[in-house]
Amino acid sequence: MSGFEASKTGDQAVLGASGALAQIWRSAGLPVDALQRTRLHGTAQGFDSSFAVADAAQSAIAAAALAATEIDLQRTPDVSPQQVSIDVQHALAETTGYFTLDGERLPTWAAISGLY
Image (tube, rainbow, N blue to C red; front, side):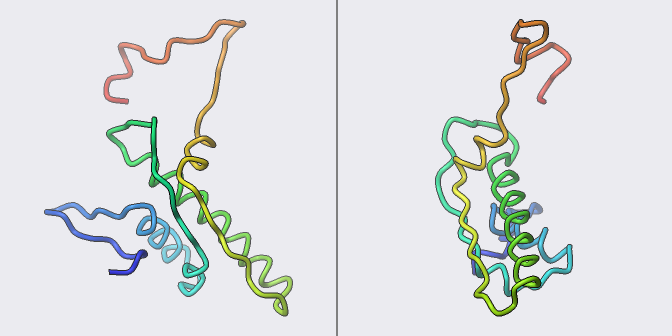
């Protein structure tokens, strides 16, 4: 299996970041060969979640960056296309924030939050 395919576990597809990127890319109708210019790497640490937050962040940022390289390729076809490399820890860092209201830090969890 290449890095840009989904594997099947029971009734659920397990995409991983590369599979998610490929799905985003193909659903947008963009040239599939461009996916070979991406490198998704690193290990997610310190962002435990029951959701695939690391895969979502890494694949979304990679898709945006790769799309930018495609625009650049259209503008400058005589130049070699750029490569995209996304470290998952860096992608996760971009998803964090520090919020206050009237100078007070808000609770990170509320009873209504449930699983979310």
